[in-house]
Amino acid sequence: MSAVAQPRRPVLGGFERGLTLWVALCIVAGIILGRVTPGVFHLLGSMQLAHINLPVGLLIWVMIVPMLLRVDFSTLGGVRRHWRGFAITLFVNWMIKPFSMALLGWIFVRHAFAAWLPASQQDSYMAGLILLAAAPCTAMVFVWSRLVDGEANFTLTQVALNDTIMVFAFAPIVALLLGVASIAVPWDTLLLSVVLYIVLPLGLAQMLRAALLKRPGALDAMQRRLHPWSLVALLATLVLLFGFQGEAILRQPLVIALLAVPIIIQVTFNSCLAYLLNRLGGEAHCVAGPSALIGASNFFELAVATAIALFGFESGAALATVVGVLIEVPLMLAVVATVNRSRAWYQSPAQAT
View 1 (cartoon, rainbow, N blue to C red):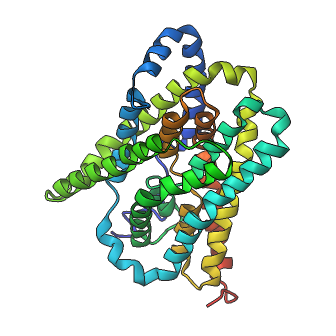
View 2 (cartoon, helix red, strand yellow):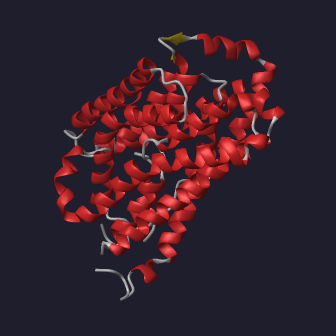
View 3 (cartoon, rainbow, N blue to C red):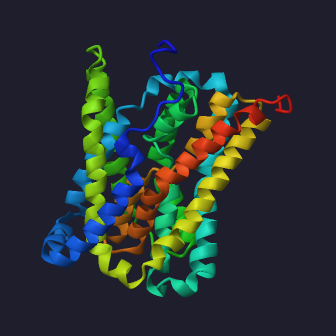
């Protein structure tokens, strides 16, 4: 690819740039529709099998399968090339992020903001925050990585590594942290969520990817066609969620702002930690940038689906995960801007080697 044909830093598509606005509009639409047509929402909410809501399950699959088409497990052989970057990102993703969010939830939900949050939902809010941080993003990180001129093979390999670990680690981490927070863990529903929202869609995406790679250009064309449907499915899920959550939100609109505080702190802390550790470890900036972004990001699609499966549409857990969706884009764009503006400092002679 020539420098003339490709801009230095690709920008987000118009739809992605406006994701926060679209999410806000879906919140309004969901609240209005929930009040105008409550019977429709109760009918959709009742369509369940083994505690899994079928309409939401379908929407989640439409949402994540196109994203999982990007995952390339053949890149795992390249881990040795940037082993320090991989080690740091894995450390932040799996040893720091879930546990720091649990701590922040305890500080803010159980103590600092307890007086302004409904006591009956505080455990549920805690659960939603834990679910949000329990798995790293596997889709939008490709966009964030390009915006910081990240090393493409590092990003591909790191996502493949995280997806492999997620299959085995997501349920135990969630169960551990929910247990520590004295929140009941329905293991059967949790494991079913892992199978339905990680194992099966990942397997389907990999089979589809293998078939498409046999025809030149077919994979890219399919991703372009499916990407808009993925975003539409996300927004449709949010309309459903807020159709159920509308009354609670109207009663206490401050809840969304309060739940955003620990999420913002967590993203800021983890992105800075990964970035600084990469600098101390002597990794190149093209690795440190995506490492910081992957370390900070959340797999909010999985979090939303699991929260609904475990606690229901009207739960505080579902609401907490949706707050993560609401602030994801502006937060990650702020991390992108910080990584780009600090490039000269990162590459200065004082960098650890």
